[in-house]
Length: 281
Image (tube, rainbow, N blue to C red; front, side):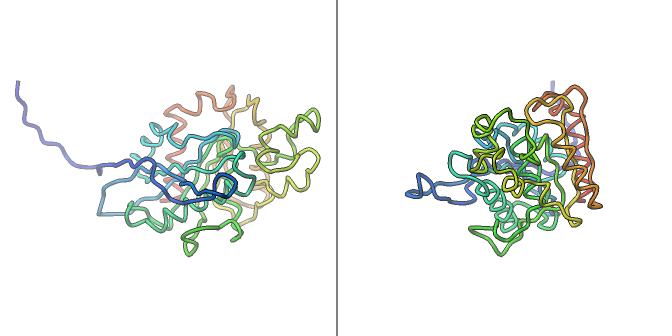
């Protein structure tokens, strides 16, 4: 059987580049250097530029895999975005603000190479889960130039919209049973201090401490039944942003635990795509 068909071209072809180096950082106690890498999904379209969404993987700041959700990120890209998943150094390599510095370096790299990847440099969003949700909120709120370290510092690392999933936002409020338990927590390891004994210092490195009236639009996703990052962590960030007069929406997902399947349903990803289309254009 032979068929001749005509196909109307309505979408660009998308390409995926994995393991692309965007920065080199100190490693092995400062004696060596290693590459930080990203995956990027972008349209081969010479007619227009696209908003860019930066994805930040979770993993308690102990582990991360930038390619773990590439299937979902590809589907998101095909709704009309460039999507980049950025690697950052974990807590065994160094404490805060090291991972935030890495995320901001990735954003600057993307802006510096925006023409190559068909990115609209004026429209950046950021999204991440758990530890990546913390970094999402910090990337959107913490605009101190001290966090912009490394290459391409002539370019901005600021973003225009943020979607953190089940983010730790005030680690000083986590319900630890003892200082010993707190000392071994992912939050203490990331910050390089015991967050139960040094609450005031820990709070200074939390998203809630960086909220201003100039914050970009936020959509926070959090499961009501989260046993890892309490739902109240998403609530307190929402409330602080709302009190400051910011554009913020908290989606509380009934029955959802930490990183539950509800976050990977098509309905959820449609909310995400709609949010970024509305806020990034």
